[in-house]
Structures are given as structure tokens and as C-alpha cells.
Length: 388
Image (cartoon, rainbow, N blue to C red; front, top):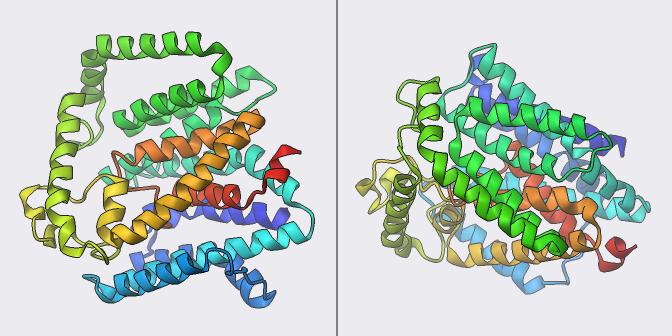
């Protein structure tokens, strides 16, 4: 497992190049190459060198259709080169990690591997956030977008730590307090709200025996939020560290939702142009036929973003595999509560995608990589492996 742990450390360190590349002398292309080298390690080590190949007889038709759709998504995209580079990175990452899983199962170390993923992932997540915080606060690196990314990523880690089983509760609360402080620094109030929602919803799903107490807690939490929301939003506005911050200039939740609603309406006018193939990865939304109606840099919705850039059919295939993994993860967690942190993390990533295009198909964000890893591992976990 040492090799896997080192790989997770390398993934966590990629935030330096992804978020602060220009500040440390790396252009975007160089940073992308470094990230690609890290996430493609399993492919070159286990697929190419060890020649471990994935059996494709299962779901062969889906695989063939997916590759055809990806091919057309590349050649018909607004920028075929960018789409090609992205898909190479994504497919190499997915295939290589699956090859590694096959090797781990052959060696009889799958349970040990699951233990590392459930218990040690917290170190890599927290280390990643500490790097970003240090760069933002002490070195003055980054921009408004970096603060927003920091908040979104921190929200996922708050949920993960909430469900971890610590021997010392005080240590756990210390970690959570630091993470909440990070959220306040990022000024991403939506991440704070989505983190609380993910925690409460996951609690309701998992702990049925105390359903009444959880329901009262949910109602009480929402009531307090509505009661103090004006003071909370005023505090965010007063404490914002960036002039004209797009994170805090929306005054309340209603206007935030109205902004998203406008984007959704715009999507409904746009997606029909490229229903089957999508517009391609990293498409400039301002160039799309109806997108000039909204002065915004993107759709800010992971599900809609996926539909736009890869097309409806390919998105449905991804959603099928996602929900198959997610359903299995719920079953695994109901049987073994040590999986609660993984479930909470995935649930946050899912509902957070309502507000941002970060988690569903993204290899440039470290938490998104962890999200995809968890889904792949869950999908490949057999029933007998989590019932033991």
C-alpha cells in the first residue's frame, strides 16, 4: 500500500501547480502536464509495464458506444485539441486505476486497500487544503476564483471529517473547527450551506433509529438559518477580502437561486444545438448561440455543464455508472458505518454540483479526483467483499 499512499500524496500536491502555477513560474500547459504525469502513473506502471488489462466483455456494448460518442465529441467540439487532451487524461486515469485495482485484488490486498481509503484519505485531503491556505494567506497567491475553489473543496472535507470515527472526539472537533475557519476565509457561503445540507441528509439516511431526533435537528437548523440569515450574509459581506467579490455580492439565497435559474433557462435554449455530441470540453460559453444573454463565465451547475460539453447520451452513461456506484455505497455504509465518511463526501460532491461545475467530470481538481476514485472503488467492490 506504500505505493498507493505516495500516489495520493502526489495528487494532493498537485494543487500547487493547478491553482498557483503562474505564481511559481509554471504556465498552464506545464501545470497540466505535471497533473497528467501524476494521475496517469497507474496506467504506465500497471497497464503498459505490467500489462494488466481490464476485461471488457461485461458491458461491451456500452463501452463501444461510449468510445464512439467520445470520438464525435472530440472532432465536433469547438476546440478539438483541448477536448482530445482532456479525454486522453480522463480515460488514461480511469483505465490505469482500474488496472491497479485488478493487481491489488490478485495480491489479496483489497481489504487493506479499502482500509487505507476509509481511514487515511483524511491526511491527503487536509494536506491539500493546508497547501492552498498557505498560498492564499501567507504568500498572497491566487485570485477570486482560487478562493471560491478553496471554499468548495473545503466543504467536501468538512463533510468527510464529520463522519470519521476518531478515538479522541476533541481532536475531531479541532479538525472540524479549522475546516470551518477555512470556509469562512474562503467566503463561500454556499459551500457552508451545502456542507450542512449534506451532513444532515446523510445522517437522516444512515441513522434511522434516531430519525425523529434527526428530523427535529434538520427543522431546527433550517429555522435558525432563516432566522439569522441576514446577519450571516451581512457578516460575509463585511469580511470579504476581495473588492467586488462575486461570492458575496448576491444578497440572499433567493437571488442566488434566481441566478442559477437564469442559467438553467439559458441552458434549455442552448443544449438542443448539440444534443448528441456536446460542445466539447472547456468550451467558451460566451461563444454558444444563446449564451450571451447571461453575463457569466459558465453554467455553474455540474450536471448541466456535463450535458452541454459531452452531450446527452454520454452524460446518461456516466449518470448510470454514478448511481450504480452511489447505490452500492449506500448499501455498504448501511452494513458498515465506517464507510459513512466516503458516503458523506460523495453526497456533498453530488449536491454541490447544483451550484458549481467541479466534481462530476474533472481531473483538474484534487477533491474531484478523490471523488472519482471512490466511485471506481465502490463500483468494483463485490458484495462479498463488504459483507465480510
